[in-house]
Length: 95
Image (cartoon, rainbow, N blue to C red; front, top):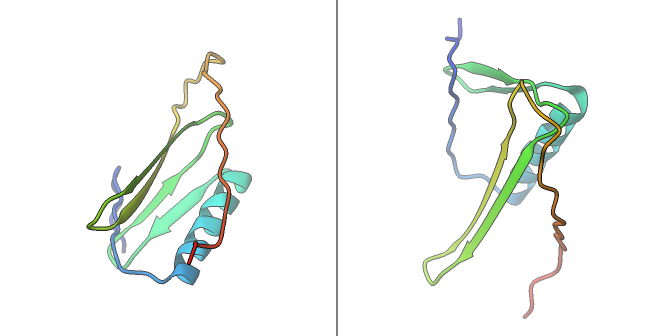
């Protein structure tokens, strides 16, 4: 039986289709109210709240590119939050 913990981490090399599938599953989890993560060793469930803090960091260097997406929330949310617009535009790379 999988162990229960308060922490889940997984890292692996994935192709674009797999990453898109994982992001869609996370989106569906937000819509349904729960996201379950699992691998061969453990299972982990999060229950997103109606308000969440979104942090996106993109970095490009000679060594490579990185995209970090952090979504956090607490169960005792107040309605005090800072809303600022975010624009994400998918494009084809320039040749």
